[in-house]
Length: 341
View 1 (cartoon, rainbow, N blue to C red):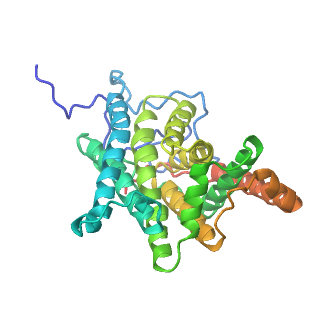
View 2 (view 1 turned 30 degrees about the horizontal axis):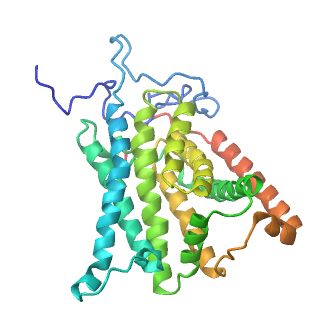
């Protein structure tokens, strides 16, 4: 029998089914939401089957497409980055000049290469979603969040706090920033005027959308239908951290990614994570542009020696903000009826 590429072995659903498994307390029946606010599924709870009572147990959803897409991602990112470098070098080549190998280290050059490299993520996630029989927006989590929009305030506060605590972890376990991290900070500190706006659009908005679409929208959405939430969060964010290559950047992105994964899971949508990720990146770009270029001799110990009490108060405030945001998020009622946007 010929194999149909569009065959999907996941649970049968109607068009109102949410793209993430419903919490165990939630009901798919409108109007059945009496009682206390529903909480997310416990870490050891099995994934929701989503099957109609009385029907036979459906086969488990396939994950080989996720594995294949993940393996293709670094190849596509490198290829698109190389293509972007050729595009940046085209004016010099037309004039018969030698290629400037440092063009990617300028504010305009690095921001442009980011468009190409992260564009590969969007193409991969979108292409994989299009060959699925499920609607592509639902497959990628691009649906209306089931969290109220007012919850974006604690979500953003928690994101900023998580990023701050990630820097604390770096200070506790590393002596000084890595050369790669210093290079990125040096480039971002050079953003001025039009290049600053370009940096906000690329490093902030575009990167935030592309990375969330691929890691939380495409990978996490599918894996949550096969595995329990906790191992999904760990696997997705391990890959998310590895994608940033630099060891110090891996640590901070892994920590930040765990919070963003919880937002997606709780909201049954990727949009809150996109907004928070983009907002955090844009904040980093703006604050970096206002600071002086990083000193090559900078160490985390020297920072604490200069601003010890202030730094301690700042990190305690970040911890309190994260705890408060998580508590508000956990206690927010999720509508019983799935919302499809």
